[in-house]
Length: 492
Image 1 (cartoon, one colour):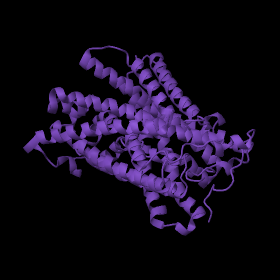
Image 2: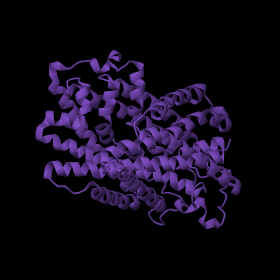
Image 3: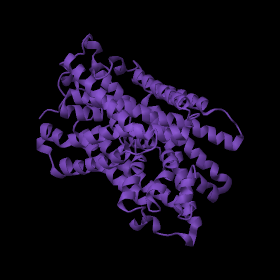
Image 4: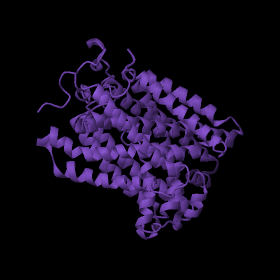
């Protein structure tokens, strides 16, 4: 059976054959397995995610919050199976957009492209903000400088964009290097903190009886734990620039999830034990891990700040690299405006998509800040914005995860019936879909504080608008369905 999308590629309306989507190719073979795996983990940003997420997680789930992380790691591994199975059959820079679109048709592809665009742009705005915010905090603490965080944010973002535009290989390796620095610091501080506790160590954090309110506490903390892993899907969008993407995307996903799961459990145990298993004190700390570093290393706690800085910057670079490929491919195939689907003639980077992606994120930051001022909530601080924007973006991204799990069995039954397996293509994605419903429920349930209470309605509005736009576009462009997934990453 021929691979779907391996046939001739239709030319977009108004384009010549020389400028069609097949000619707008990224630089193939530029990245190896280590590159895409390190990019994935840099996108996850363990220091950034753990620093600003664990206090709330510990308060919600209790002393046994590491068990919530274990549950989240298993869930993400289930999602990883879905992504790796799709990438093995049809590797594409379009990632989830291609996978869902090939399964359910062009309307679903356009809808997914808009959910992905809004979700990832809103989510990356949290990283853009916290990069400058954490640098402001560090410089103020050590040097007494009071330069506003927005200035550092703009400078770091501009520098990252320049690096990303230069080429995927150099920017990915820089992100990988930044990740290596943060991981080294996190592991050393964690081991030192655990060692300092000596005879006071306990297995309490691993006892289910110490989760707040039992299963309800586990479920309530689950969305927070899942968010620690957001970015795990990074490697799929880099498929077109990867060596052997059918094999390496899956390997990068599973190795990254496994390493991050073990690492987060280590960091969590070091933190709760460092606070004497008192989650009240953990919740009262703005950045619990840094406080543990101060208690453990004294003046050498500077390295914990350094890990936070490298983490935010690495996540910004890796996330932008991956997520702009999704917009680029959607533009190339006509799901989004065509100018997004253009590559630089020599560097082969999706320059237009990169600039639009980052510029929109910056505009969102400005609009969100204006909303705070007009709403009489005062100036917007980076940590609060990080929590708010990452939550909003995650809701949209979780909808895409859910749709991809539902799509997998239908895709394999339609295109690869001879490879269809009940466990890999039905049972595991079904479990992944069920697991995703839990965080979706807790992120959308009534009674949350403002602005979290209106995020579900905003997400629903975006979904309805995306479907409406998709219906109009597919009627205007009958050939759209043939272009979805038409460019396979490893096709010549």
